[in-house]
Length: 443
Image (cartoon, rainbow, N blue to C red; front, side):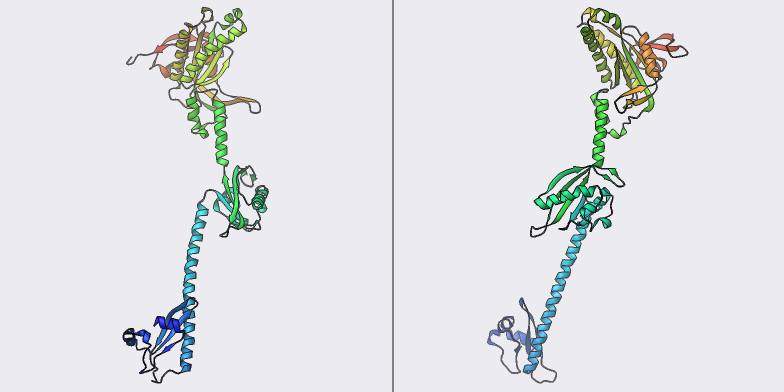
C-alpha cells in the first residue's frame, strides 16, 4: 500500500467487488481485515508519511469523484497538521534544550571567579556576570546595554582603547594589567584578557573580556616584600620563612610585649684601637661580631643592631618563643665558646672578649624611625637599657643576667649570685647572676 500510494500520488478507491492492484499480491488478504475501501495518502514535502483509511459510507452508496477530492484535500490538511505538530514538538524540544543550556551557561558564568563581560558589534555590553559585578562594583542591570566606556570610570577609559584594538586587529590582548581607582573600592589591581567573540560562521560578533582581580594577591605580595625586606637583615632564614608563611600575622607598627634582650660588648676595644690601624680595627671587630651574630641567629634571635663594638639582639619577637630567655642564654654561652675557639687562630694582640648582659621585661617592638627616610625593626624598653648596663659591668668572657632572666632559666642553667648591683638609671640595686653553663641532665 505504501509503495502504491508513493508512486501514484492519488487516493486508492476499491469499489465493492472490485479487484485490488496486482502489486498488493497476497498482502491484500490481510489488508481486507481493515474493512477500508478508500486509502488517501498523507503527504508532506518530505514525501509520504502515512494514509487515511476509510470504510464504506453509512448510506451504503459508493464514493464519487467529489468525495474522493474532498478526502484527498482532507488528507493533505491532515498531513500538514501532523507535520506542523511534529515541527512544533521538535522546536519545543530544541527550545527546552537551548533554555537548559542557557541556564547552565548562566550558572557557569555566575560561578566563575573571573569577571566575564561580552560586547556586541556596537561595543554595547551583552553579558556581565556575577564576578564582574563584585570586581567592578556595578550591578549587571546597570552595565548591560551600556557602552564599554560607560561601565565605570576610570575602568571604562581603560577598556575602550583595548576593545577598539581587538576589533581592529581581530586578535586577542592578553594579560593587560591596570590599577584603576574604582568607586567604593579604591585602588585595585586588575588583569584583563580580551579576545574577538566569534559566531558559528567565524565572524566577529563582539569582544569577550575576562577580568581577574589581583588586588588581594598584590597586597599579599607587598606584605611579603615588606616582611622579607624588614627581617632578612635581623633574623635567621628559617624565621623569615616562618613569617612569610603567614605575613598577615606580622605587625610592624610597634607592639608591647615581653622580650629577652641581649647586649654583647667587646671588652678593651678602645685600648686595642689605640695600638692598631683603622683597617686592622675593622677586620678584628668584624671577626668578633660575626661570631656573635652566628650564635644569636642559631638560636633564632633577632639581631637588632651593631653599636660601635657592641651587638644588640632580642628574643620572642617577631616570632613568639616560649623559651626566649633560655635561647638568649644559650646564644650568650655560644658566643663566649666561639670566641675562645676563634682565639686559637688569631694573633695574641687581636684576642678580644665579650662582656654580655641579659635582661627580661616589657618592650615596644616594631619599626622605629622616619617612615619617609629610614626605619629599623627594634625594641624600646627598660630591659634593653638594663641588658646594656649589665654588659658594661660584665668582665671579659662573663654573661650577667637579671633576676627575672635567672628565674626563667634556673632549672636549665647553672649560675651564681653576683650580688646587688646598682646600675645607671635604676633607683635601687638589682640582683645580678652570672651564667656559668648548662646544668647536667638530672641535676
